[in-house]
Image (cartoon, rainbow, N blue to C red; front, top):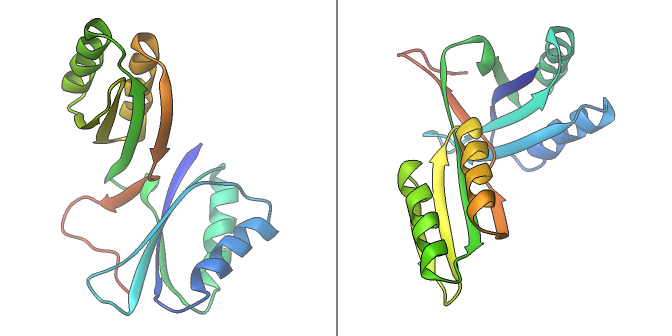
Length: 165
C-alpha cells in the first residue's frame, strides 16, 4: 500500500541523510522525497512516499522517531489530507494536428503550456499523483514524450490541525 509520511525535523546539516540512511539500512524503498523549510526557518518538513503494509510503516515511523533531529512523524494516508505533485513534461508537437491534440489534453487536465519550441511543447501540471499518471497516459496516445520530471508528492493534513513540534 502506498504511504505518505510527513516528517518535521530540525533544519540541521546531515538530518536528511540520516533519514535516508535509515530507509536504506532497513531496505525500505523511497518512491519520492521532497524537503523544504517551514514557516520557522529552524525546521524542515520532509514528505516521503513509500510502499508497505501497516507493520512496515509502523516500524519505519518508530525508527524515524528515534532520530535526534526528528520532532514529529505523521502518516498522512491515515488522515484526511491534500496531496500535490508537480510535473514538467516535454512532448513532440511536430504539426498542427499534434499541437491541437496536446493543447486539448492540457486544457482538459488544467495543465499549462509553459514553453514552445519549433517541434515541441513543454507542459506543466500540478495535481495528485493519480491525475498526473492519467495525464501522461493521454499524452502518450497523442505524442511522444521527449523528457519528463516530477517533483514527488507533498502533502498536508486537512482542517485546522497542524504538524507541530
